[in-house]
Image 1 (tube, helix red, strand yellow):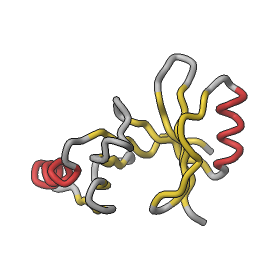
Image 2 (cartoon, rainbow, N blue to C red):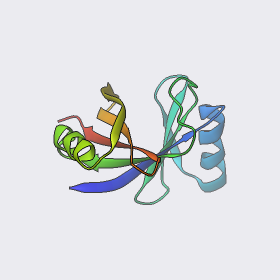
Image 3 (cartoon, rainbow, N blue to C red):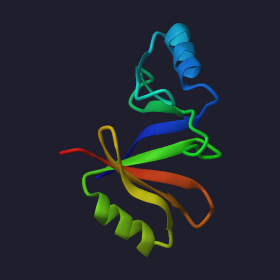
Length: 113
């Protein structure tokens, strides 16, 4: 199973970004430390804001959910993708980032068991 279920945006202030969406649309936010916020309520896809410049991508990061992270990594590499980060753990699971042959960076994640 592979499905897009998360988009991460770079932000100069994760707290201000999440506060904006809470105020404007009534969506809820969960802070995961001083530089990361997850926002729920935007439909089937949730999204987050990454303030840490060392962790930010230059464009929104589309994240694909899977049940088997290692198999997904193998598939990405076999198809010509280049792993750019990870796999690594984060609150709720593990993920890796990759660049597809056209140059877009995406991520694949798997929730903790």
